[in-house]
Image 1 (cartoon, rainbow, N blue to C red):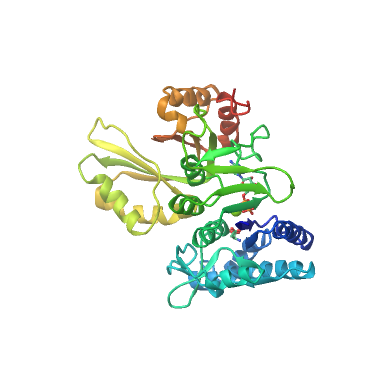
Image 2 (cartoon, rainbow, N blue to C red):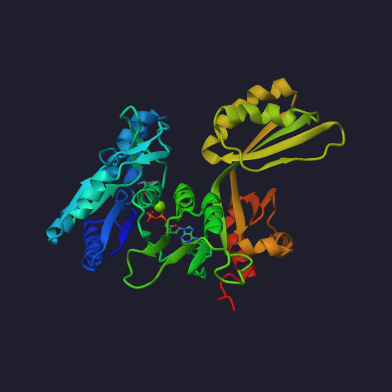
Length: 409
Ligand code: ADP
Ligand code: ASP
Ligand code: MG
């Protein structure tokens, strides 16, 4: 008998019929003698609808109240799923995040899980119940409702699996595993049987929304056995996130391509080239809690330099406002903002032992006339910032150039 945590995403919970399907799948696992804890998302589109409603009342919704509103989506689906299970003759009990007591910090809309009380869930499991927990939400020390950021139900799932020391955490979604890239963009993308934890961490942080980054971090920290599978197929092993780099002796050089449309670039032109400039520009941006990603500063000939960096697109206006204040202070000539940036990254642990990956990437993009505006690298990834209008083309040509559509020999 195993203890399994299963997480079902919004598409899988999208209609009453699909909820009944999920219930049938859970019943099958229970019939095999397993204990099952289920984490669910809101019905697809519901979280967006709730955010839209909030914005009709308040253009910049109060974060505490926004969490009160958006956390309702998951309260609906836990109840509906339990009804479906009870209808099938199973014992089932639903809990919101606060009811379990998923304790988080107080960063509304992006809270971090600090502690999970497992007692209540254990007791129900021992009594033969399926435990159904609302994803994406928790409660802070003062009793305020909190949410974990978009896609946060993945993190609830993995965190519960860690707390309960589950045998496996299964993330059921609308694709049958982790692919070499988003199959919606590249139909030739291939499903991976395994992907290393480090690669998955990079893919998630570089924009592959199949798993929320924090869920992968949790899996790494607590060594949770994590698998991504389809809720629409009965067969298939999905993709297992592996911890041993050496599972296959020969790793593919590139495992996948990640991308993110949601970028903006800010440039400060004609800044005096002297020590402390980067700090004077980026210090106030950091103080405003804006994440800076790529940074570039060119060589100066006339004693001035141009300084560019990228931020999430939603922060473009706020960052530009802050730079207005910085401009006079550092004596810059001009500010520019570009909201239509995208980032494309190739990821693979095999990069550690191979050279020439960057040049192949740059050549492939050059052949399509795609201009690279910024570059950043780490041991296992290379990212480039490009104009968003070339994003899909870039992903497709890179996928082909690195032969990701071919089954590795
Ligand atoms: P859920 O609602 O189940 O949480 P998401 O929409 O958050 O589902 O995540 C699944 C989606 O992630 C897929 O439909 C797919 O379009 C997208 N995706 C992006 N990159 C990848 C990838 N490398 N492999 C698989 N799916 C990916
Ligand atoms: N419902 C939330 C969202 O849409 C959480 C999740 O689905 O993971 O972001
Ligand atoms: Mg998701």
